[in-house]
Structures are given as C-alpha cells and as structure tokens.
Length: 192
Image (spheres, rainbow, N blue to C red):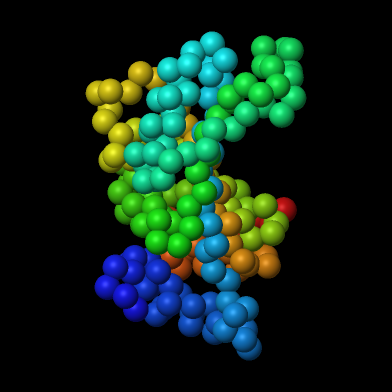
C-alpha cells in the first residue's frame, strides 16, 4: 500500500474484508461488500429568500469534505413552497476513494462523539439495497466548522453507498469500519 493510504482503507483491506468473507462465506474476493461512495446532501429551504444562506452552506460543505459542492436546483415549480423551477434549493458532495475514507474516519472518530449525550447511531436507516443514510442535525459537530461564525444551525444527510446486496451485509461492513451503531435489544438490523 502507498504511504498516504487512509487508515480506514488499510483496515478494510487487512481486517474487514477477510472477516466479511468468513462471516458470509463468499467464494470470490470480488463478492465482498465495499464502500463505494459517500454522498452528503444539505437542503437550504431559505435559499430563495436569502442568497447568503446558499453561499454559507456551500462553504460549510467545502470545509467539511475538502471538495467543492454541487448546487442542486429545483426541477419543477412548487407554489406552496414559493419555489420556481431552476431555483437553488440545496448543495451536495459525492466523495470517493481517499477523500471518502478520510471523511468516514473523521466522522466516526471526531464528529459523532461531539454530539451531546451520544450513544451511537440508529441501525434502522438502511434502504433494503445495502445503503445507509445518517441524518446529522447540526453542522457544528465537525471540527472544521467554527461555532462562533455560524449564523444558523442546519443539518445534512450523509448516505453511505455500498456494494452489499443486503442490509445485513452493509451493516457488517459499516460496523467493521467503525460505525458506532446502537442496537435496540438483540434484534437484527432493520430490513426494508
């Protein structure tokens, strides 16, 4: 492995992959689930009224991920929400490879433990196809965000896209990489 290989990628190669292969009985090493990408989405409801809100959200996502976000625009007009087609309504970033593993590592070791009374993330947000979405209520849990310069608290959705065929395999993969799941009782992870 190269010297600048992320710690979690090395952990996946050395430990998690062989554990998953034994646990699920994969014959081919290419069958073993892997993390493919992480998508971070931030909706900006007030972007139509406040252009600064969009700029702030883009800058915060850039600081958190180290990558410039894409601005999401409304695909159709919705009169009740005062949204016209083409208006900016959010920002998103898709991380892959090195940045993906570095973000995952910072999320589970630095950001999530900053949540007050943190006891773990719920294990019920799998989509039935091996992907997991985590809702974060405050952007201030990330060390890159200076709390003194935050105008308003806002959240984001972080989606972990895996090559797993089932939620059970995705759960085992993310748990092996260090995702701090909290399980309700002794039941299995939820399946959609």
